[in-house]
Structures are given as C-alpha cells and as structure tokens.
Length: 247
Ligand code: ADP
Ligand code: MG
Image (cartoon, rainbow, N blue to C red):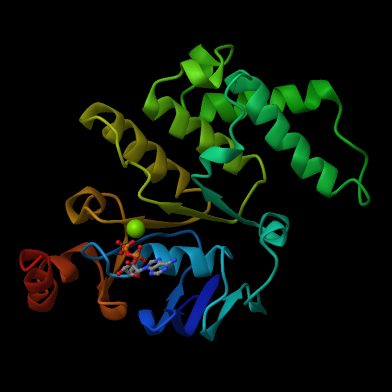
C-alpha cells in the first residue's frame, strides 16, 4: 500500500468459547477509500466489524488507527478519536423527530469536547443537524418522529447521527439489510458519496451490491482472509467464485 493506512488490523483472531470466528486476519485500509469486506454467511464479517469498531476486543492481534494502538480501547473513546459506526438502532429516540435525533447526536459530540472549546449554541446545533439531514436526503421529513419514518429513512437517520461526530472513519455493517430495492439504491448512492469525504469500511454479504461502488474488496471465508483486490480482481478470482457458489 503506497499511502499510510488509516486503519491497520494485524493478526486478529477471535474465539467465542471453543469456536474460532476469526483466525489471524491482517489487513490495512488506505484513507479516503471505500473498502468492502465481503464473504458468505458466517464468514466472520460481523465479528471483524465488532473488533474493529471496539464492541469487543480480539482474542489475539492488534488494531491501529492512524498509527495509534486502539486494541481494547473503551467503546465511547472511538467516537472521540474519529471512528463512527452506523447502525446502532438503539441510539435513535423513536418519539423524537429526525431533526431532534441528529441534534442530540451533535450535542453529544460537543459535550465530549466541552473542556476544549465552548459549547455550541442551540442554533449552531440545529444548523448542523439540518445540514446533516440534507446530506443524507432527509430534509423533507426532518420534523417527523423517527418512528414514523420508512425503514430506509430510519437507517439514513442513523447515518446522519453517526456523521454528527465528524468521523474520519465510518464503519457500516450490512447497511441495506431489510431494505426494498429502491431504498437499497438510495443508500448505496449515499455511501458512495460519503466515501468521497472520508474513509468508509462497509461489511456486506451481497457481493454484487458493492462491486459497483467500492474501490477495494476484502474477502473473508471461514473466519480467515481469502482474497483482496479491486472489484475486477475479485470478480476474476476462482477461489472467491468457488466459496460464493458453494454456499
Ligand atoms: P458473518 O457476519 O460473516 O455472517 P459472523 O461474524 O456474524 O459472520 O459470525 C461468524 C461465526 O461466528 C458464525 O459461525 C457465528 O455463529 C459465530 N459467532 C458470532 N458471534 C458469536 C458469539 N457472540 N458467540 C458465539 N459464536 C458467535
Ligand atoms: Mg454479519
């Protein structure tokens, strides 16, 4: 890799009891690229996502963000250093409007930094929430309670909330799960445009979905690294074809 990686995963393994969900995975992510982690069901993608996003520590191996070892770091520290993950549905307040939800998310960021700079005013937070809602295509429904939004809109709202922490690295696990084909197209377009401004790592089961939008793919199989490359490389890879056809 020519550029210095923003995220480095080195020899990461994860065991759940006797079950080995990940085995010695080493991969590095270049900044400002959209990379997809793909693989058949049970390949270890979500486990990889959880280790990298700090939900739980690896059994072995290290994770580095911008050169800093973040292995085992507390979950709340991740947002502070510039890593956000979307879809944490539990963070959405169903009775609050889309606008209020994003404003709360933005407020949490400024509260974290309040020792370093003055707290943002309500007007500033409101403006920021509006800009983020515009960014994810929810401007028209900003006043609606989150619970009244369509499934695809709720997930776009979660993206806006994740963006409120101004992450340099955005992690997403199967962002289009449960979406209609139309909602899927809207979300993939959004992800593609977000990736022009920051690093995005996307975990996705459906290979076809990511082929058109990501610059690089990493394939996991049985908890281990199988292949990596451009979409063209991966499409032509016989091993990848075999594991995808064999599932
Ligand atoms: P993927 O997201 O690629 O479908 P996962 O990372 O969710 O795969 O799961 C990989 C394997 O690890 C699966 O066999 C799954 O059953 C197992 N696994 C995942 N999480 C746990 C857990 N908390 N406890 C036990 N086994 C788990
Ligand atoms: Mg998964």
